Length: 77
Image (cartoon, rainbow, N blue to C red; front, top):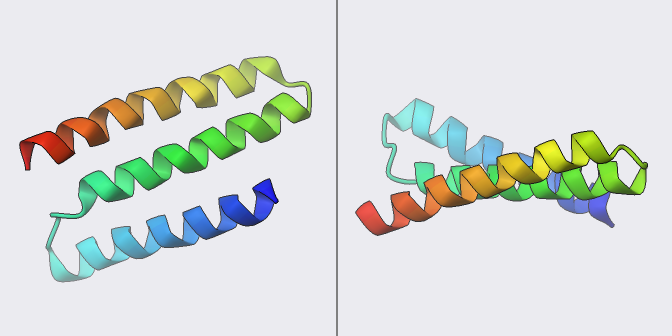
């Protein structure tokens, strides 16, 4: 279940990034960063399941940072 969700979030994130690069329209960057953060959260949960706690905590930290950045993007745009 987590693997399928990770793949879906990754594909949607890549689509947002590709759209921004092709059209030079970067108004959806905060959404892309939020989806990338969710992908990192899912990857962190998978690492916790594999008993790799250091990598899991690192990815959860990246998720929290990207969540903070995307919330700033939502509020400032």
